[in-house]
Image 1 (tube, rainbow, N blue to C red):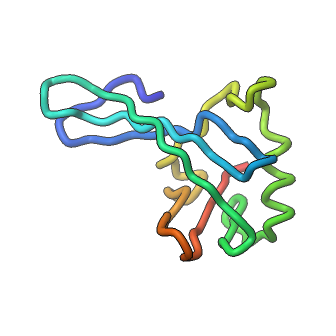
Image 2 (cartoon, one colour):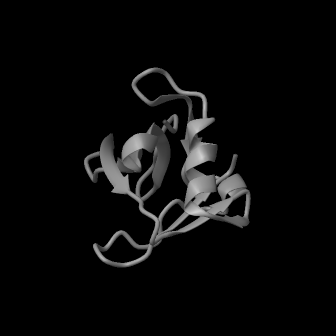
Image 3 (tube, helix red, strand yellow):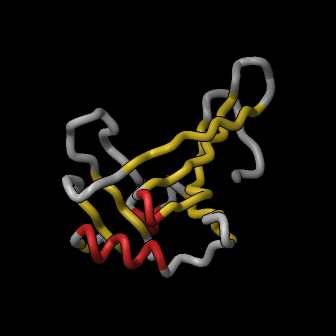
Length: 110
């Protein structure tokens, strides 16, 4: 989680990965217009129709799934170190289109 947020800012971290079900949970921290930061948890699903990248290199669905399975997490899939969603190491994005039926693009730093 980001330490704080200011008026109009948003931050996010991937906090849970469920490789078996092709799901990410992202914790978004955002300013809620009442002088407070608020957390929202959003579930993203991926499938073989999507585009995958690891450290900027295109990957197959199987290679992406395997790389995620190597991520350090506890038995419940919670990452021991959350992955910053907007970090420069993952090219600044996790998902560019979450609409049902359309291909999404997922980028992972590791």
